[in-house]
Length: 194
Image (cartoon, rainbow, N blue to C red; front, side, top):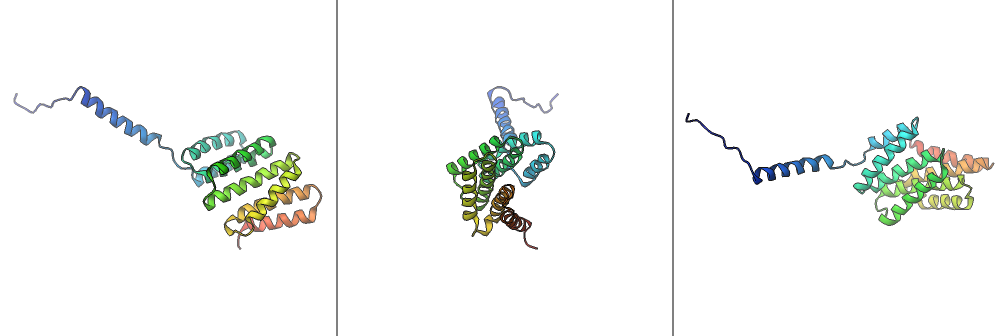
């Protein structure tokens, strides 16, 4: 029998190679993916009929966004949670907005997407303050948002949300003409050109 004999490698070299391979596979599997527009849309769909699962999905995506330091996505998720909580748990909605504001203060809103998300979340937080009876605080916050976003075309969606919230509040308190003007301006801005 004079054929080829394959030598099987044993001992520390084989174990080391297997460990390196396992670590590489584990690292590839554990690498979190960025929070995408599709992820955010999945939350919006759940918000329409399944608040519990929507909150769970928000929490999962927030962990991913925080892990990858996607502050704009984190703040968008915070806004979605704030809006979802406004109907059921107003103090929780306000708390979410305040935590988001703390993250902005800590990390800074350096790019347009992050500034837009921060101002939209702030509008939700101001509306929550109004709903909680903190009229002076909520009104002042909305005015600050409107002033800060008025002249920047990239921030017009945040301006529209602040006007929407102010219009809803004005209408509720009986100032229907001013409320309607805010609501119409917000709807026109959110509808976009055309």
